[in-house]
Image (cartoon, rainbow over all chains, first blue to last red; front, side):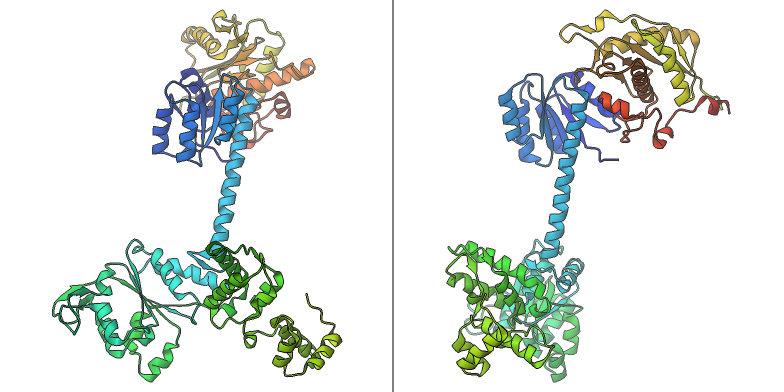
Length: 448
Length: 188
């Protein structure tokens, strides 16, 4: 059984409205009616409709004007214009304004069925498109974090779950993997989304400055403290605090923060007055915290308090299938930000980027794309545009096969890596140019 | 529990082929398992005629038949009665250029026009069959049955002659479940 459309008939003639309503009643679906455009808009404001049959000629607001309002305010509502007056101009105008169809009354009984079926199919296609688009967006992008690989899908699945609670989250991952983006996504999905998100790089600030930045200070608390100042723990006022490189916090600061997390109270530097605070903590680290715990520079109780939930962000080399998506994303980003019209990357170049290990992860990839776009001479980025990538970070395609096969693959990889520059490639391989030429001839290499 | 008596009449609304009425009545019995009688004919009310369209307006036809029914029903004290009026004139409702038949949901009277059932070349038997299907469809509406998505079912909204011809002379199993209690069921 096909889906029934929520329908409204808008016509100033009562017998027309009744005729439609009787027909829909026999069709087993409820329909509503309005005697004017104004009444129709009032009804639309209180409940959604899938389809409107609208008479063109009505006193006050005519059908074309109503069509304009509906398409502007309720774009998902289909409108079929009905009229007793044949007018090509009004038909064209209505269709251009987004009407789904145009019927001249009285119409044949099968014309009504055809129109309903047409609208139903349009809606089904639209909803299928939205579903696929939604699935695709969900698969490839989560609040600006891009990835369709299984490791990233697992991260995406965790974000909304952890967002709903106030439990402290510890994000672990190498530099450049997008830990701050994940923290922002957690904040955006949380009940605190409308409140501030404040990021603090704990490794970038000396301890005394970090203390003042976090807890605030009273006037005169230290030299140059010319006035009182609220710290981030107060300013965040119910939002989310993101501590990047949390492992760099001193042991004294860890103790102060631990008390703050337990009591939800702070004391500004130089003050004896307790100030209540409310925030959700998300921390991140690119360093293995276990080592710091064993060294004694990270308190056990602080470690457990900041990492009630741990989310591991995978390095880019563990999710190489996301590289093409990221490349496309950054290409679009830098295409908009620069005057360069770089629109695509050759498959060979993408393959090369997928083989690269990206020690700097997504940030390094982003920089690579930006550099390639800025220095490009055409609309397409090629292999040579990425020749600057460090050869040692190239993953050898395969580590199996005979010695000859391995040599063949490695030489080819180095040639590609150096944009087929014989001198540079020979230097990397540790052989002279003549030997390299012989090897190229022996293996039948051809520059693509 | 008192079983309700259901009376079904098939009448002519204006001049109609005499053979058609008992055929319709017989098929009502065959499909609904409800006894149907051929009733007294009535005239087509001229007040229903629309000279602009050269057609007869259904609401006015139904009203005329209803008025006559009320008098007769009062005399017979029948618990529930339905009337199927067969006419040869062309009929319409305001939004459609024509209809083959019309009935309001759960009402007591339906009208069926054979005027356009001969539009496609057809034998007399084909025309009778079409008329029967339309009549049974409209009678279904009188028993509050809605349109059916199954295009072979009698309750399918058959908006063309081809659609009527495609219909089987029966309801699908889902619509059959909505039929009123049959004569044999009521007798227990």
